[in-house]
Image 1 (tube, helix red, strand yellow):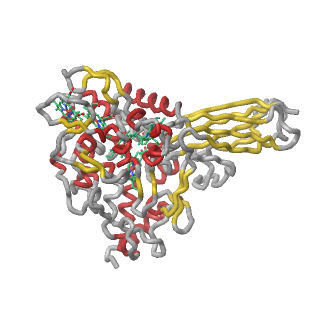
Image 2 (cartoon, rainbow, N blue to C red):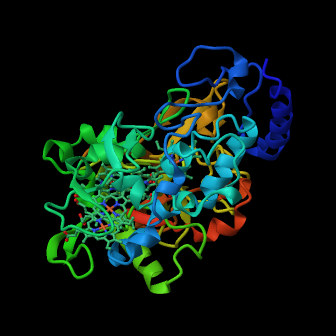
Image 3 (cartoon, helix red, strand yellow):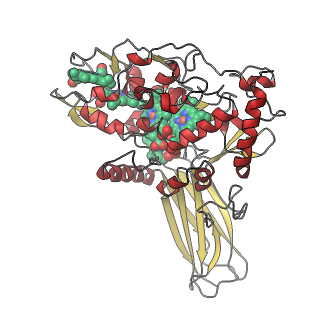
Amino acid sequence: MNPRAPLARAVCATLCLALASLGAGCPADDDAPLTDAGADAGRSDAFLELTDPLSMPAVPTVSVGSFSSATTCAECHPRYVEQWAVSNHAYAMLDPLFRALTKVRQTAYAGAQDRFCQQCHSAIGTRGGEIRPGFSYADLSPVVLEGVTCEACHKVSGMEREFDSGHVLDESGPMRGTHPEPAPSSAHESVVSPLHATSEFCGGCHDVTEASGLELERPYAEWTQSPAAASGRQCQDCHMPESVGEIASGGPRTDTVHDHTFIGVDRALTADFILDPLAATEHDRRVEALLASAATVRLATAPSAPAGSLLDVVVTVRNEVEGHNLPTGSTFLRQVWLELIATDADGTVLYETGTLDADGDLRNYWSALDPYGDEDLVSLSSSFVDSRGQPTLFPWLASEHYSSSIPPLQERSFTYFVPTAAAAAGPIHLAVRLRFRTVAPFLLRALGLDASVDRVLTHDLATAATDVALP
Ligand code: HEC
Ligand code: HEC
Ligand code: HEC
Ligand code: HEC
Ligand code: HEC
């Protein structure tokens, strides 16, 4: 037995109390062991150091000091630095939600699994030896805190796998990009890398498989089966659109300057991440625009309600994204759901699903006020179940991952039975919304991030409405 295990379990027991309301659980003695990637070993392995020769080496394979900060690129590539600095890649190690979750894991495993969550969020820190069992964020170098910084991408010389930080980092190599015939520079050598124009390059970090082997995130795997892949459209074509400009200050203008804001769905949980109010508004606007293109909904029902019985309402959701499922990525954090409300002409609510409790939470298993209060709730997010069959929020405790996401350009229909007998006056108004938010309030509160709850915006991806006559 690992001598640290009993202590760690005591710490975990305390944590369990704090997280008991989440059904979070702990790696208790009767749990299936969480082992080193795929190894079939005893339960004390939960506290063995989790390593991987490429992405979580026990002995450093690169030197943190050999990587340049993004600030050193600003002299010649100012626009790239400005864009990157407000992107989620720059936020990867600052994110309070990331820090809170990794803290829970650090406590649960006495630091033994500390490299796992960091291997993509800071490959330089993990491979450079700063992120090791028991590390503290306060001790990290600036370039490690830059997270997915310029050189975490532009010093990539190849791939060993398309998941779990599968990139090969060549610390002393040239700068790699896709700009043909780059002009010489005193700052660095440049080499053309066709890899950087491919989805495979993004897949190295965007597909996440837990230490247990459970698949957590798989946008790249989804993309390989997508119409976008069939027509040669890469992640970059949607997430790094091209415009006209100069690549280096004073250089020639080209029309292949790639956007580096990497717009997705996220909005920083701290208002001080994007300081410039104009840049912050622009970020929100672009997220809204990306999401507005993501889905459509249709509502089908009879033109008039059958007297005194149930009205069948069919809602069809179509994923309009050619490149991957809806949702994709961190689907277990995201909330994507259908809200359907039926009212009579007096405004009396006859039926509702997908509405929130007084805490702002969905009325599902995790609601403190109305658990399982919304039996018809349709969610497209994913969820984890632990080895005892209990829901859990933590991927490292999960033994199953259930996803309800919709594949690219496909649709799914859901049938509701709306009671109409209580309607005083017609017509009955039906309104449906497909709603999206990056993280649930209860999760933020449970992790002590109450102050961030109001930072999360709820987006309506698509809406539809119709009126039904009373007989
Ligand atoms: C294989 C690389 C990789 C590993 C390992 C990894 N992540 Fe991530 N993480 C990502 C990527 C890529 C995203 C962006 C996905 C998205 O936005 O849907 C992300 C996003 C996140 C976010 C969302 C940011 C937000 O504010 O909404 C959190 C939180 C997070 N990760 C926590 C973790 C934790 C905790 C672990 C360890 C269990 C972990 N990550 C392990 C690559 C990784
Ligand atoms: C002294 C100026 C200077 C500095 C500092 C500088 N670069 Fe460059 N960089 C250039 C020039 C010049 C080019 C070529 C531009 C062209 O051909 O139009 C270039 C090209 C590039 C390319 C394209 C390579 C290709 O083949 O696609 C990348 C990527 C790049 N730089 C990244 C960086 C990063 C990251 C930093 C900071 C760590 C940095 N540069 C710092 C001047 C600089
Ligand atoms: C055809 C355009 C297109 C392509 C190709 C594409 N995406 Fe997306 N992506 C979108 C749109 C639209 C959204 C917003 C809707 C959503 O979340 O699915 C999005 C969302 C995302 C998100 C945020 C998801 C979340 O909820 O956290 C990530 C991460 C992402 N894409 C990564 C990728 C990666 C990696 C690839 C390549 C393997 C890729 N995308 C290819 C259009 C595209
Ligand atoms: C997440 C990975 C990633 C990060 C972080 C990143 N880049 Fe890039 N960069 C790319 C990719 C991929 C391309 C090529 C896109 C393509 O060809 O489709 C690129 C292209 C470039 C180019 C070549 C010209 C062009 O627009 O294609 C320059 C210069 C550049 N990046 C500079 C930077 C600088 C400076 C930083 C940091 C401030 C940075 N990059 C951060 C992935 C990244
Ligand atoms: C070295 C690892 C790494 C590479 C390579 C990488 N990413 Fe990321 N990416 C991340 C991480 C980690 C996050 C989440 C950061 C956070 O919010 O905590 C992220 C976030 C994003 C987001 C924002 C998602 C959101 O929810 O808003 C987009 C979009 C994105 N990446 C696209 C790409 C594309 C396109 C490529 C390939 C050109 C790429 N990334 C390559 C690690 C990487």
